[in-house]
Image (cartoon, rainbow, N blue to C red; front, side, top):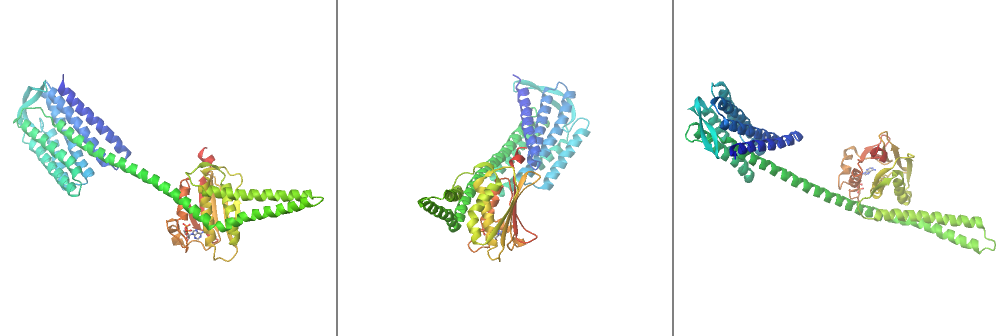
Length: 487
Ligand code: ADP
């Protein structure tokens, strides 16, 4: 089995794959410089492995020498990328030290290509063959070049840089991260440097296996990046959980706020129900009287019965709206006519608004396309806006007027506007009023507008407030119609 070929090829292939994955990840998020550095370091390591394999399989000095020369180019890429990785991932390391290391390494690369042979040999006599992993491989015989010391100086500076960055990271309170990454880089680079020195100064007979050491570094870097990814995934899950919880709490709050609002309206709602009941009673009594006559007046009897039916219908509509609003449950999206939802909310407030001498003027566009939404949530938005308008005009002299408008916009959104004739909103409070617990009312909670915003946000809409040039506050939002969503 050709173990050397298999091992070195597998090393190069793994580095290329890992590097490509991280390069793609970097393309998606260019701010993650450590991913780019990882990719380049992995590609550099694949280059070193390829050159080492070519050197081991060389049959002549003419084949060995170019492979060794280009190995330095690949090593330069790995070297610079590792420095970049340490800077960007550990957020540590002295810039002057890394710059000096890169400058020295670049100088040694330049010398490598300028010298007649290469950085490592002043003269090369030939190749010798030795058994390595049960395979015959080539190593070079020659006179070592003193220029090699520039490369080794660069590696020493690099080691100092990594040790310094590791200590900084450790002191900052991340011993695990600094130990895994910094420790691994220092260990493998030191081992690779030692081996290179021993082999080239002919103190130890072995092929150059720097790529295996760098492979260890690539794995440690990959582990550090995947830890970040795991951490990010964990954070995303926690965030999603928190979002779900916050959504559930918003719904709970919306329900409680609805109950509080209906409680506040209870007196006028009782009146709203009392009215049809009185109509029913008086018409039923009238009908009894008509029937008791010897010649019953049938047209009048029929009119009384019709009034009973109408009053009953009105009462059951109010009860139906109330039941819907009291109901607690998950939102139910359905196709809705926004004008119907608005009129239902107005019907609940009718007595209350009459009692506070407030006139409501409606300008509702006809034949509006339906929207998709939750009836209860949208009704709650209307109730909040209308009761806020009522409260704002509480101290105003009559006429107190609320103008509600629905319009179909050219982009097929339906714009809803609630404009009152109150004092308006002080300009510096235009944003504040949406913040939770902001209220200017004695018994206010300051949750209504914030809730309206959340409820509308789940309908892909945004509630805005402004002061109308003719006076009064104006709240508006636009809802996408079904026609817009399904062109
Ligand atoms: P609350 O009604 O409990 O005060 P909201 O969030 O509904 O809570 O309203 C917050 C504040 O926004 C109100 O206290 C009021 O100062 C201001 N506001 C809301 N609607 C109007 C309006 N139509 N005109 C003037 N101010 C308003």
